[in-house]
Length: 124
Ligand SMILES: [Zn+2]
Ligand SMILES: [Zn+2]
Image (cartoon, rainbow, N blue to C red; front, top):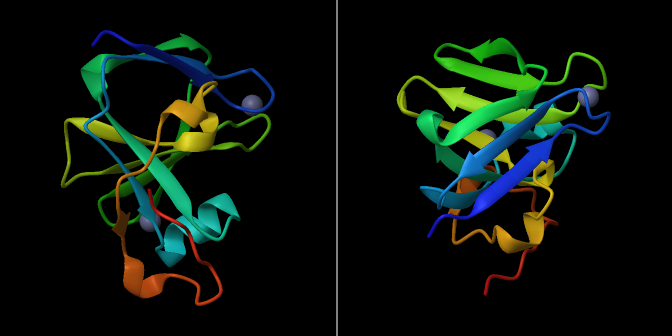
């Protein structure tokens, strides 16, 4: 599989391209992701650093907690990435950043214990 997934921020200042299949795609229900995205839950697409190249601009990053860096567009504020030093070889991209997000379907959940009680997602 040699798929190419292009993505970027809302304003177009930041663009990137991921090549190949992601390592995993998962829902994250943690409070930190909720704060960063403003959404009730996030879906992350994990790509190896070496699978992704920036095609325009750069992702601005800040440390949200020890060992965790979150990325966004400095111009429009779009939520883009989360990196955890426990997974040094990959970055986790918010699924909504990809042009073809419909093809990036999550297969499970993490931090389910922090899920908002009124949020119900149908798997499958
Ligand atoms: Zn932007
Ligand atoms: Zn999270």
